[in-house]
Image (tube, rainbow, N blue to C red; front, side):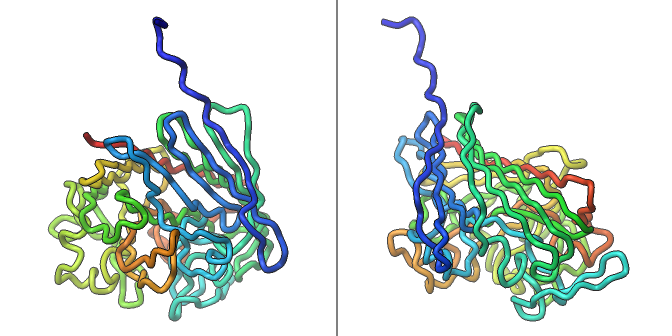
Length: 363
């Protein structure tokens, strides 16, 4: 018998066609696989993560992100499943901002406000994907150039987003951006998770903790008031792990405004160092998800506006609260709040951000 265990297999990246856009452009898909059978699949359209397959405590595999089976469904959909969000994630109040003495109007695509980059945000664009070799992880890099004036934003913005899957079951997302003119930039990924399986229904039993002492309350149009309020004594206190559904329908004005949780938490920590932001545990499967990030904020969204109208993978109709998102980002509406961490990127500076989603099991 050998006196040592075999070395783990090297992570691999494979590429295959995913479909054709109405323009005739081909869209490729990339599958990242590690030594433990964990796989991540992402496509060039929106840079969307379409599948994450992970084991439970008994080793059974399940896909734990909501998504679609076909490219056409992603093109027609409006739920941002798994997509890269930009130029500016979340909402901008009044669909406008002022920068260096100039006011820039944006498309109002959610009431009077702008949401997730506009009518054709980064989620609705074809990225250029390329698999990378010579690393100790499986990875794919997506690149995009957003032209000056795109959706009303100034400057030509060059963006690179890399997904890297390690044998430690960690999915690392690295964002980089440069610009030709000063412009706001706030990038994130909009994956919806359900650790019981994408088709398992309500996520209320998932146990969540968030490393945050404060959050940013919303006004009636879901724009931050500018306050950074303590979570203590509110349903927004997840410093001690609690089921997501335990207080989601409590009689609290902020929950009424968000129709549940759809808020930004101010992550505890200093500067732009990588730090733990959140942990989720699904009791039945034992699956866990830990989130680390260099970002100052974490938007926890509990799928309040899913309504079963969009067919997902396998024909599943994703109902309200069938998934949750943990979107690492700067604070919403930051260009209009001088006290919030700035999202302004200027020429000659490289914006860099990292988020790590690590999957595991509690036995």
